[in-house]
Figure 1 (cartoon, rainbow, N blue to C red):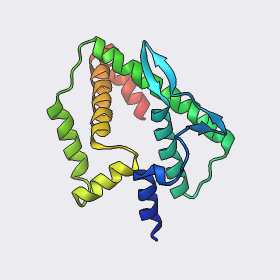
Figure 2: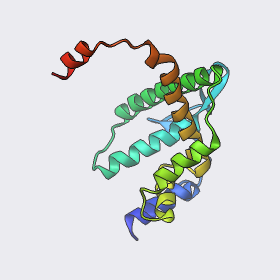
Figure 3: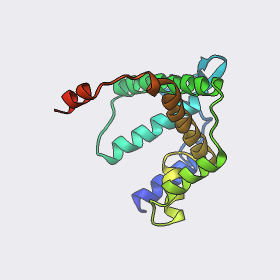
Figure 4: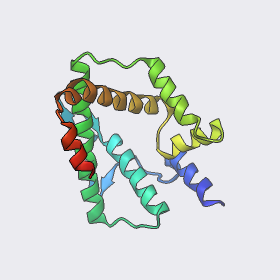
Amino acid sequence: MNFKLLLLIFILFPSIVSAGPDVFKINGKVIPSVVAKVNGKSISSAQLENNLIVFRLRAQTQGNKVSPSAETMVAREMLKALIMKELITQKALSLKIKISSEKIDLEIQNIEDKFPSHDAFIKAVAFQRMNIKALKEKIKRTLLEDELIRHEIAPQVKLSDQAAKNFYE
């Protein structure tokens, strides 16, 4: 059987891989269902697990093997990133920054247009252990982050023409 097809089957139907209950472990240690709370909003172990699985798959396709100790370190960094993204999203929402569903749909269409077919696009989304709903949420969060930077951070940056010229030279 083709390796990519087998991989896709395991991604789409994870219950085939393990007959036992879904317990997320890192380096043999069971991870609780909620790995962090950010101002009352839970970050689930499923989010962390999805990120870690995608990381493992990418490493594997590049011919790399991730050691258990490295995987623990990677998981910690991924959790920090999830927390940071949640804080940024919460800040953007507290400032009443809104992203329209039309803008999100346009971003999805722009991504899909880069694929040879709709089927190839759906397979790529599935490879990332996502569905369209999850992709829309990820895009919304990214756009919220971009808008927050435009509204709150960019106006604070003061850079003279001479400083920019010096940097590029």
